[in-house]
Image (tube, rainbow, N blue to C red; front, side):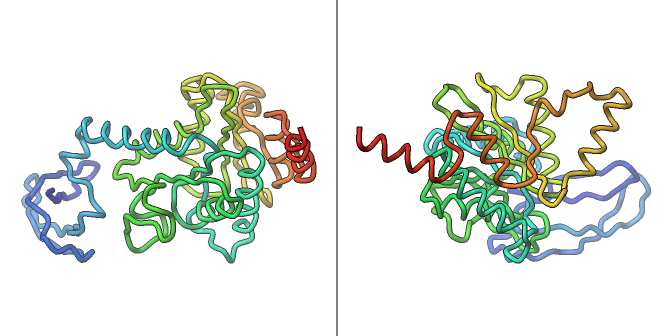
Length: 297
């Protein structure tokens, strides 16, 4: 696997493969000087010599390599089962109030829907949803990337999940395919959902991509998939206001976005919505009564 050297030329970037990675990779970075041929001027380039941080240029442009990784994502989903997909910030740690809310939601939704919980297998709110599902004793799966936003070091390994329950993706496109497919409903017995927790650029990227797939009916699901946006402490309010402005400008049809998702101010609203969507008892007490009744019969 080679590493790439490039130099910026205004809005253009020259990239070429220069060789192989050294056998011992220690996350070191190297400042190199080369000549920008167009201007015949030296320019300094900073490149990483760590294979875990870069994807070889030839592999990144190879549809075969990407297709293989998508296939591995689908295999993992087939093995663990589809379920609830959580999108959310990697930066909101255990000391953030949204972390405890996300953990509670992950636990209660896993109990309610009795399905696999899927995340990006990263820190922050993804970690909270994962731990919540584990507390409920339900299966979890994840599509990890080596380095999340805000992290200084890259790692292909999760700190506590068994290796057979997550996949470290090299390609964002493959990761997105996995996150989407994990929420697909192919039969009435499938209980899936997409839950957007508070997050930054990456979360918004995933949120709007899935929203677009639902809007254009290209998500690949035979049955509707509930899409919940957790508006904790009005986190998404300005975004919702902007979408309202889009309606006023005519770039979005009136009521179109509101029909595609459910805005939830708290966990209780989310649980009640999912229970109603799937025709399930909404409270823990009611679920226990149903379980007892089934056992008696």
